[in-house]
Length: 495
Ligand SMILES: [Zn+2]
Image 1: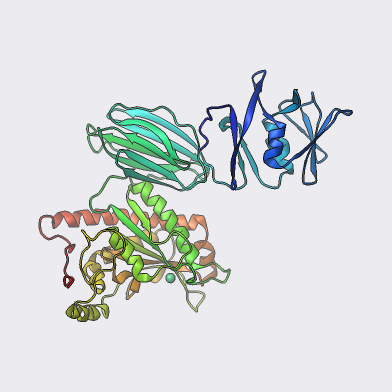
Image 2: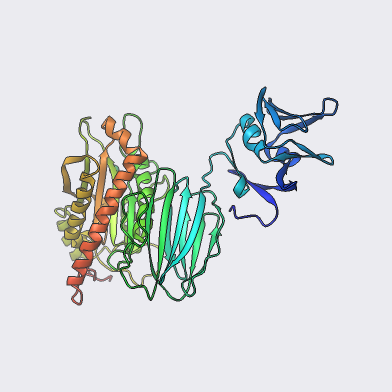
């Protein structure tokens, strides 16, 4: 990670790996050794002692430098440098901007010089610059992050730490010293793409909010101590963007499992322009995961996070094994009629499955599929019965999501429907299947692949889930003490 290197070095990071270049200082100016640049970037350097010229060649493109002149001729074009090359014994020293103003013009791959961070990013690596500010605000601590360019992040809590993980190849970050006695003991990077806020014994909970603009993501993490009187309200006026729901730990909704439909050899629906359902679902699922984690502070799992096959029952099993509170399967639809469009939300229709479930119950054969992990908390219930106990809650979830979708994207004529989707059958929690739109409709296909439209769908789902959480909390509270929602085994015990 691009922390300030202890030695005077500049880091070159590329897909293939990284290397360091030594930094020399002359008259307060920081310079790079030309021979090290040559080795790092496969340059040929030739010194013409008679003409006192220096020729740098990459493939068949050349840079010609003249000692004592802050100029370079790059493929015949003159560019200015902040300083002239300096001879150092048998070596040559170059100003940093030789990389950005000269070398980058003849190099095949994008070179992004970040002098302040002493970093050169080679190619299309995601290396967001992250600014961190920590402040104490009464009994709470506030950590503000500015991330540019924007990358997805997920915020999770583990014992003693809040972890902020970035979807990046490396972080361009310098961690400040930030301590709030008993509450925050430090901020540091724990690996190349994760920041950790170390927590003290007074820590109780945290909440996050996000804002920013197209270029910069601003995330605020408020760390509350045992003295914080709740609710302090959004202490930070949310930056530019619309206010996001603040995360407060909820007992009703801790874990969300998102199921990106299809994958691997199963493409799902295919649009005229070639868009594949399996790719759209995975993209939206990843965005949704990041949004839920950062906005609600919930744990989010994907049933697949790659282009891979996944049997339907296994998808529900992942949700069951992880005690998910909500299961959302993402799909894109297709129709013979190109004009058909709009999102639809489905929950399980128990007709058909109900009969089958009853028959199966009598033979007492199936138990809820699970895999891995221990058996201590596994609920022994019938696979075919699992979802039937949550139909009412699933219907509420479907309605809330549809209402949020409706204000942002087109919905179909029948936006909420019941259908016997296999993937929902075994889910032992409220579960819906969202058909985000029709890839068979050319306009909608184009929209479904755009980041802006995917983000609209994501925000609708996040808001739908926030509303559902409130509904669940009220419902759980009203049945507290009694058996509550049917979370106890109802199926036949395993023989
Ligand atoms: Zn599908």
